[in-house]
Length: 356
Image (cartoon, rainbow, N blue to C red; front, side, top):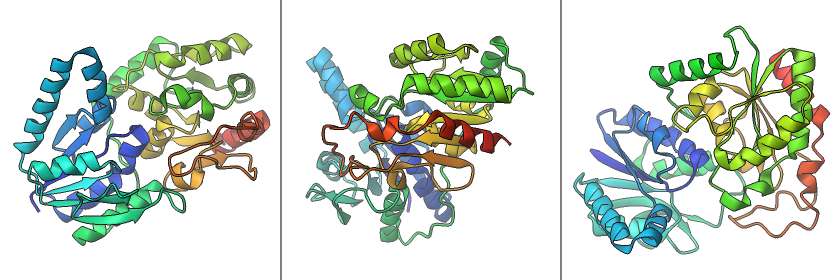
């Protein structure tokens, strides 16, 4: 086994779900060359991983955006991407895309062994495949690891993996110090958004901003914690609601921590309170404790992995929950009651237990 290409065009969480696969590959074949075909947004996470030799960061979705700006720029970007991948002469690809166009391209450029999932008949260009109608009865990591059976590779370590470079950690410490956080402080980060992969639909997974504000107030008042609000610039309005509603003002770093620095900031926190999203999986990979609130999405499939006492998932079970199944979600007729019913006290109590 010489060269292996991992294909995953999805968000932060899905990329981190592939890291146990990469660890198993490297353990069995330490001299192998691993390439990773991803979207542009997650590139910083992959470039820091010492087990990945080369990143091809341009997904089909990224190309569509470039084509909308300029047809010729999009065409040139596509040709350059294909050439960059082809010239590496990969022997094997593990395709997690669930999209036949990725495996078709892998076939065209000469990758002989193409392993992946046959979702809705989209695995027709794969040489080895697992039939799939969706992720529902186990965690996504378990589905991903199943593909290794075609390579006869054992799995000894299922923990997610995320690297924080020393330089990035120093930058994160400087950012926190600049807003008055000392190394002896109890630091709790709050991520009230849901990451970028859900785009305009992210609000479907949001626990109410006012409840985040109430929990943050209690943590500052009763636990003496310093609370940091994190998120990208698109989540600015949520942060403003939280800050305005709080008596004990938090530290607002929304839009001020790029994806290059965000893992290092999370690593310097004692606890992360968050909706279901990529930062939760970052924290799990970094060994940071989490309290997460799940609504329409199944925690069995997309929750912190692997399960342990450092990660508390809070939810309000209803007959219709989880409603996000097979990558589809119906219109909610109950105004996201499954999220709204998760109480401030439940989140505070879980956080206090983890901090004690």
